[in-house]
Image 1 (cartoon, rainbow, N blue to C red):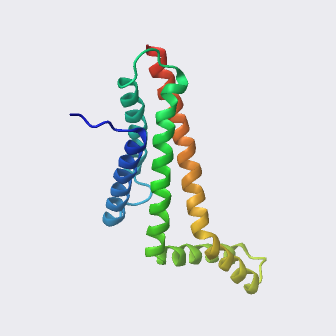
Image 2: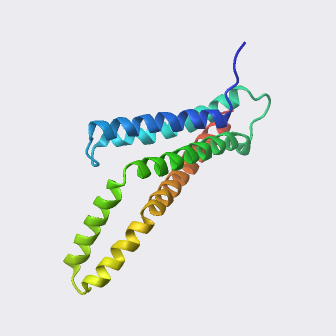
Image 3: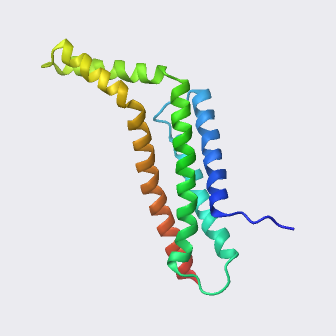
Length: 162
């Protein structure tokens, strides 16, 4: 008896592997400019490709572009939801990220000149209030674009091949 892996379940597995990689990178304090960070994108793309290929293996008959695209879409949407949830929880558990980022932002504002200390404090407070929203927005937007591109290319290649 074989278990059928749905695209959503593959998306969940992909998201969990990505979270594990993020936690490893965080634990070993890998620098942000390290090329090893691209492994995260390879995991993401690999999960999407896996979902599409797995679905095509289980599909009989002619496979259209949309039939190939749909499991990739389901996979990357579930992966994004898992990563957004992780981003929120992780940053709530580490409030020092907000404090450190706000301090860097304040230093940048002070160096720019032209703003009063009161204006700078107001801008830093607004930054702190919107920090988590900004992180979630960047995460969603970036992964949506990458997911759509990988899904479209994989779907096009796999339907053309048949």
